[in-house]
Image (cartoon, rainbow, N blue to C red):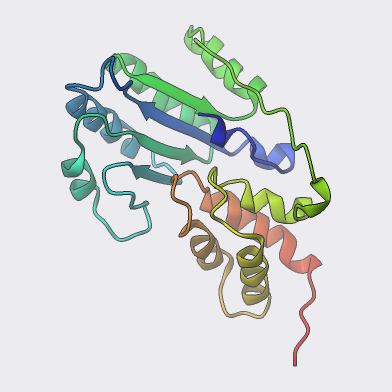
Length: 215
């Protein structure tokens, strides 16, 4: 799933940002996949993902919907998208998924050397590896890097630069704290891989560098 490959930021920040997808293959193994997806999603909950969405409801962890309701909604062909904020959580989740052996495709996105370290430690040989080739075209029209490290956490581009700037202003002026601001930024993400824990850290780093005009 290439929409998760373009996350930007400093390496030490990206080392705490790993997306994981559960993907039944339509026309191959999606029939009867509902109980398998449900079982694997239960394993995801055990390690505490930073965010998660199942395609059955499109409601993330912070929408107020209960885990029971999400699990009950899963049917054949549904997919799960989530993000973890640590290497350890990702590895433990992959260990649980490997032991469950449900036969569904698992996609992991993160810094390639860190992901390969984990797969090597587990004795896994990835079937396919996709790499981001960066940004091409009218790069003069994209927002600066400090804003892109937020916007690129949503693979579908639903977190706008304007919203990021607004949240920075609101946190800077004390209208929101950094966690509340991160949840505002996570809300439009329809793919469930915006990482509010990483976003909170980024806001805490950036806020001292910004000034706000008071009218």
